[in-house]
Image (cartoon, rainbow, N blue to C red; front, top):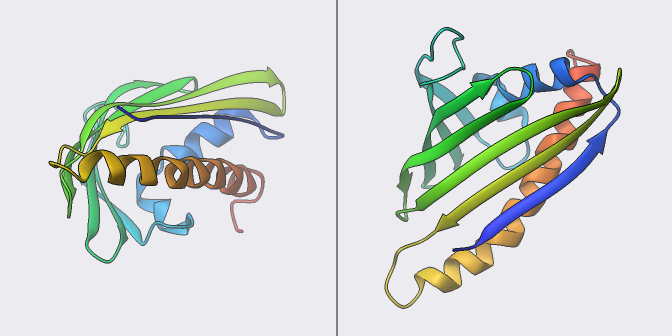
Length: 152
């Protein structure tokens, strides 16, 4: 199974960054995301444990993701529970935030997935992995900008 793991250090407070990364309905501000809808609220936080978000990536590409771990402001995990147009076997999506100082945070984003299609599934997954890596890095950087300047 392809694994995508990125680490980025950003000059922003961990709590503020976590808030931006877990405000699912604002994901449309991120490059590569057309929109994101919260289809089931989590408990006790709206975007927390048990929340299901529908992420429209453009065209026919849609992912439904469930939040399966939520420990603010340090970590959250999600699983893709439904995907279109290809089925995705998603083992792990994990975003960890480590405070390196009052305004410095290390983010580690890991995703383990497979596309279980005969013949072409492995090729599609291997082609997608570097795109996901770029998307995760971009999302972290953009989230840091929004955490510093919410009006951006």
